[in-house]
Length: 264
Image 1 (cartoon, rainbow, N blue to C red):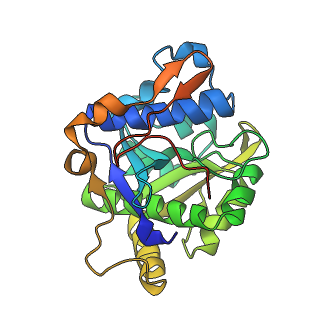
Image 2 (cartoon, helix red, strand yellow):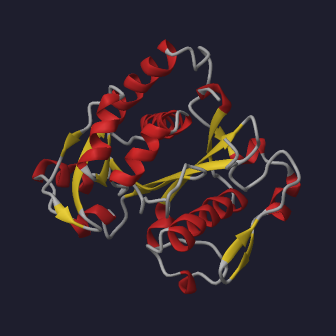
Image 3 (cartoon, rainbow, N blue to C red):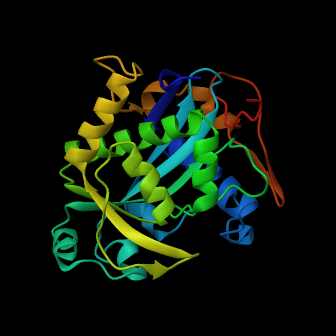
């Protein structure tokens, strides 16, 4: 599979956000145990920040499966989640107050080779996530697609910078892609030692546009993301994962399926 086989999608409808939340439930509740599944009886993992966030998905064009999630939290009256977890540099706090900073979180890439739970509370994934990203050829490509979509969304909506709270190992992986990610605050303990990092949307978009162009994975007019409302068949909502207390069951019909592909 190549980068052309993965399509980032902005979940701009309730149905699209439901796919996003159910994927998060599968990863963060059932697989990692980071969130208690009993808090989400409808099988959709979400929190108060989702009311002021935009949600991205990645779909495999080859299988039709959903393979990844990412959200961008936009600043509201209570600030960003990262502000509650660590101490940020003063200049970044001023930018957050102006509403020109968004927080990337709830990254999940499903269908990775697994010797246990798939890690990744938001962009707070650690060494296990990085090892799997390096081990599976497709996974860094998916990450590139997600970050490129987030950067271009920021440029279109007046967001100057993106911030995230990550382990140093994941930060190194992203910088190896040519992204000028830089620390923007003090380390903190949140499911291990995490460090706040930030990058301008302009620099992020430019770096990943160059990367995908040089790899031959992007056509000149290839958009950073599509809209769920434009690609989803009307019957998509009928093919959401069915949730039971201990597992999520997925249908296998239609090209727009929700179950990740574990066969490759």
